[in-house]
Every structure is written in structure tokens, then in C-alpha cells.
Image (tube, rainbow over all chains, first blue to last red; front, side, top):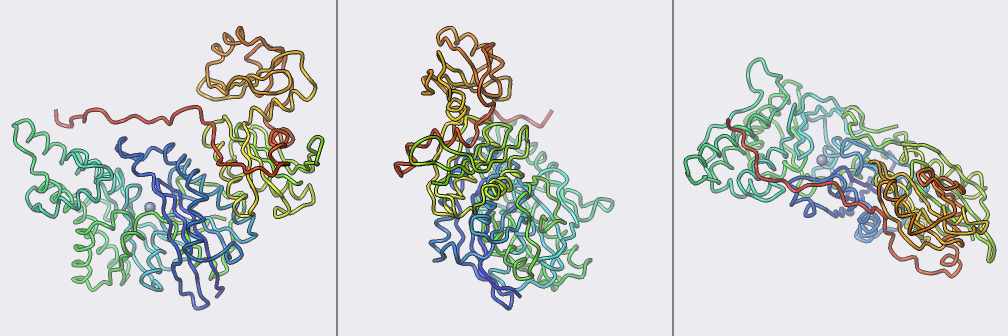
Length: 349
Length: 224
Ligand SMILES: [Zn+2]
């Protein structure tokens, strides 16, 4: 295997991420830097990420983030052996900033460029914390995606088993948070207030769990509407909203469906490992219930720490490191940013 | 001095390698101009390397970088600017930003005009970006973003003899000079700063418009 140092750039949404990962001859990956510059506060008053606001922030943050990452890792330009970048999926305008920057660094340093898949990178990041990843089932949940993937090999093709048919799980958290008067992004706030609530107080619907529904797809739009109806009914009668109970019951409905489908998918596809990733994987109830259900099913659960679950450059560098180790053919410098890049394409040619 | 010049402020993607002598005009040694492109991100870096190859130099031989900072439609503009910023950082070379309209005006005024010049480029959404220059190429107004009809009205207060730029036609004036910023014009605008070895300062994109974003209003009810 080829060893080396990979610089990874991530700009698929509102985080400008630059990570540096070393891969050794035996394939072991080590995280050396993970710098993140977020524009999340600029989006808060809009209740969601505004692509143009995020794109402008990426342009300003890109070079300083690379500087900080190199300083943190204690490396210089001549130490870098490859540059990896998220080529998609994501917001087209934000992806373009990272892809253009990555091409410039790769060309100037005369090293290979790897344009990689954001979702595959969410899975690859786990190796930085938990070591080599045998074939696994991955559940990726964030504000932009909700997917179940079969990942036999990090550097090889990924098979999508299911995905959301409407809202991403993180989007549902944002919308329900707004309904309850909690700030954006909603995930951490729902998680916090739900700790004082009863998850069984209100029976919210579990989307797509009927016998004839797609077994591994998700739907959170109906749940979001059910929460809104519940809150509005209380408002009409002037009843105070039991915010903690609504948050806990909503959160339970989301994580119940996510973990039940993930465990079922792992068993049906003969996987012994379930890997969590994406911003929603930082949710404490999701982590707890996933652990409980994996234990009961005899599965090993692997969850990176929260800072590696949310979008970051380390995950891109980690996937790049696995590709470099296998001497994968680099991407060409006319690599496009592809907002709807299919997850089956781990490395874009 | 060897200078790499980039501009993606319009639908044209420009990359050129220019020799800047100690005195006199810049000389283009290699240039790639992809006209009417909608693929700035895909074309720019290969074209930079092609321009270097044509000039017979490597990227690392470049002494400085000049990039157009617009005004221009946001997404394309950022490709050139982030590429310039990253190349400068990676090569350890200074990056100078220049107004893309200034570069067009510099080439249009190469032969001294008898009066003012207007530079007009496409801002989409039925508007244009424009700036006004005196005969020797110094900018005296703009850049602005306005409807073509508003620009034509303003010409009354800024009598001009010619117009340049891809939307020069909206002025009704004689059209001269290049449609978009070329490598020679970009380097000419930055020539004094380049020769002086001046600290270029931060790169600032000329967006001229705020992002489209609205703060959410009152919650919509879902119940009937
Ligand atoms: Zn993500």
C-alpha cells in the first residue's frame, strides 16, 4: 500500500472544512488536523442554509482554513501527497468553491486530486477513530441526507439500500424546532429539551413502516405535519405547549424508525457492523437507541465522535487516504462539482 | 516578471500567462479563452495549465497572480477568485485583484479616445453591470448594477464616445475593445502594484447584490 499525507476539502453545505490525514503502509489512517469554519450563524435568521450566503463564506474562509490545518498538523506544502475534495452531492454553488480550490492546490503542488463522494466520506471518517472498517451497513442522517448504504469496502462501490423520499431527518428537526420556538439548527436544541420530556407522551406516526412500504426508505414529512397539527390543536384551546414532551416524542418517532430500519437492513444484508454518520448522528437518543438495538441484534455499532459526524474536511481526507493507499486513479482537473452525484460513485474520474 | 492572469466574471473563462517588462506594456505568452462557457469550474484549471504550456513555463515559474474580481454573476466569479487565492497560497506568490471592467477599459483605451468610455457586462436578471471611464482609462463611476434603460438615462450625465464589454450594445454607442477581460488588460491594471512589489491586500469580490434570502414570516398553519 502507498503511504502519504492527504489534505481534504469539504464545502458541500455551510461548513468550510479542511482536514489532514496520514495513511501508513499498513492502511492505518491518522487524523492530524480538522479545521472547520462554519457560516451557520449567518443562516440562523433565515431558518435554513442560504446557498449564496454559504458560498460567499466559503470563498473568504477557504485559504485561511488550509493555513490553520497545515499549522495544526505541523506540515508544509511539500509534505502533502494528495488533495481530496467533496465533488458531490451537496449545494452546487458551495461545492464549486471547494472543487476549484482543491484543483488549484493539487496543480500547484503537483500531486494527485481525488474528487470524492460526500456520503462515502461520512462512512470513511469512522476509520480515524475506530480503525479499519470491515464490510458495514451505514446509516447517514443529516440536514441534507438520510440514507442506508451497504459498504462492503471503503474504496469500492457503495450500494444504496434506501433514502428519504421527502425531508431529510435533520430538516425535520429544524422544522419542528421552529414550531416549538427553538433556534436553528434545531437538532441540538431538540436533543437538549427532549431530555426533560416523556418520549411516550404523544404517539406520533412512524413513516413508511407499513407492511407494503419500501422497507429501507424514510419519510419525515408526515411526522412533521403531525407535530404541527398537535401544536396547533393545543394553541386553539389555549393550552400551554408541553415543549419537552413534544420534542421527546417527535425525536423518539424519528430515531425509532431510523434504528429499526438500519438494524433490519444490516441483518438482511448479512452485515455485522452498523456505522452511523451525519450531523443527526450526534443526537444522544439516536446513539443510545442504536446501541440498545445493535446489542439486542448482536451487531457492532460504530459511531464517530460528534465533531467527526457533522460535515468536515477530515472525512474527505480520510476517504482520500484510503484511495491513495490503494493507488486509485486520480480525478482529472476538469472534474465537475455534481450536486446530485449518486452514492454509487465514490471517486469521480 | 511572469504573471498568471485569470478572469471568470462573465460567461467567458480566461487564463493567460503574461510577461510584464520593467517598463512598457505586458506581453501575452500564452492564453486560453473559452467563450460562452457555463462550466467555469471545469474549464479554468485545465486552461491555466494549457496557457502555461503554450508559454513554455510551469505553474511554479509564475511570479505573481492577477484575478478579475468582477462585477460578475456570483457562482462563476468565485471560481476564478478562489482558484487565484489557492494558487497564490500554494505557490507562495502574491495575488492581486483588479476590477474586471478596469481590465476591459484598459484594452479599449489602448488608443487614446476622444472622450469617455462605458464598460457594460451581463448581470443576468435583465440587468447589466457598468462602469464609466475617462479617455485614458481611469474609472470615474461604478461599477453599478442596473437595468439597461437606467444606464441609457444616466449616459445623459456622463457623455461618452464609445462602449466596451459584452453588453456594450445596450448603450447605442460605437462598440470598441474586448467583450470580456483579457490577460493583458488584467495585468496592465495591476502593473504598478506588481512592479512595486506592493502587498496586494485581501481579495474582495464585487458582487454588487445582496444574496437572495428572505427571513421566514409567520408560520403557515397545516390544520384546516
Ligand atoms: Zn453531510
